[in-house]
Amino acid sequence: MTATSIEKVNGHDHGYDPRALAEAEAIRTRAAADAEAARIEAEGRAEAEKIKAAEEARKQKIANDKAEDRAREERAARAARIAKLNREREEQERAAREAEEKAAAQEQAEAAKAAEVAAAEEQWRQYALRFYVVCSIVALPVQIAAFYNPNALWLMAAPIMLEGGAWVVLKGARAAAADHRPHWHYRLIAWLLAFIAASINLWHGLHAFDPATAIGTAFASIAGPGVYDLHEHGQIRKRDGKLTWRQRRAQRKSERAEAARKAAEEANRAAEREAERKAAEKARMQLDAARAEEFPKVWEHAVRLAAALGETTVTEPIWVRAHIDIEGCEPGDSVDIIRTRNANAKRVELARENRSANTVSKTTKAQRAIQINGSPRRSSYKPVPPRRTPGDTAPYHPLARRAHGETKRRLNAAKKQKD
Image 1 (tube, rainbow, N blue to C red):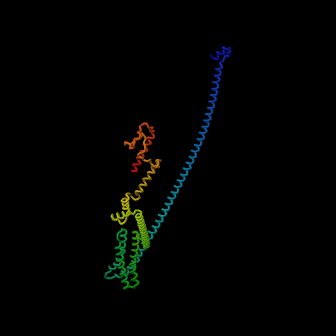
Image 2: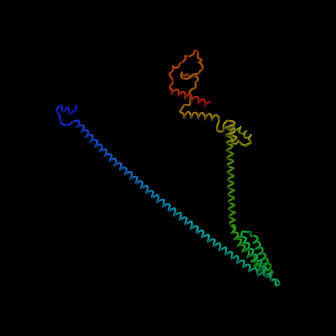
Image 3: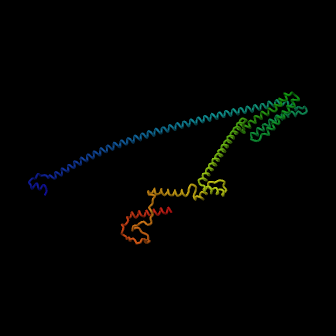
């Protein structure tokens, strides 16, 4: 029976349902609470969005500031690089200009020097040629007078032949030198002709004139070709690159100094080699003495072995062979060392496995439980001990069986390694 029917039975009919009102009120209350919660949640979300937007804006501003700073730094670095490149290019261009100017100045100076040298050479050649002509003019009259004969006037051409022959032969020497051909015989013939002309001037001048005229004309016959040949000889030496007397002297001095330096270096190297040899010999003798004192048997065998092999000293291969023959191993090892090394290696292995070096006693007659297989031989006890049957002892745990098997395997391995 519902509340409405009860109220009707009791005579109280107010026209509404209190339960429905309560439920409606509860619904309204929940709706209001939900609305309030939704409003609070919406406000919280809006506030969170606002905070998030502000944070994003702050982060974006920081990122923009960082990007702007990076861009500014990059622009500054690029400007600095460009300025540096410009400076380097300007320095290179300035250095290139200075080098070109220096090269041009040097080339100009060399050209000026070469022109000056060429002008001096040409002037010297002209002076030598003019001096030759003057000397020929001075020497020819006495020679012509020497060959004068009214009945043979053609002999007066002989002096011209002598002076002209010397001139022609000297020009031949110049041509041979220019063509890089031997020229000594041309110069020899020119000097021979000059001496013949000088002899004629000297002889005829002494007989027909005074001694001054004789000596002067003889000197003119030699001086003219001689000065011109001196000029040509200088040109030949310059062309062939021959050194002057001062240069040859300086070269010989430098060669002697270099030879002395090389001799001193060779003496120093020889002294160093001798010192090294003596030091090596001393070290070898000390080593031989130490080996003879520390290993007398091996040393005695090594000496005999060296004598047998034809060696005057105990070399290293002979010492190794002798040590192997006597000790059975190479130098540095021995039986005691090998045993100690093996024992230490075993200790290290046990230490790495976190086990003690003291192994379990291998007692062959230890009491065994019934689970362990015994020896097939019968017991020698009198009287016979009571027979044990399966079930007398609780069986081993599988872990205990596994541990027992592991211990047994280790004992067997240790026994094999020792053997």
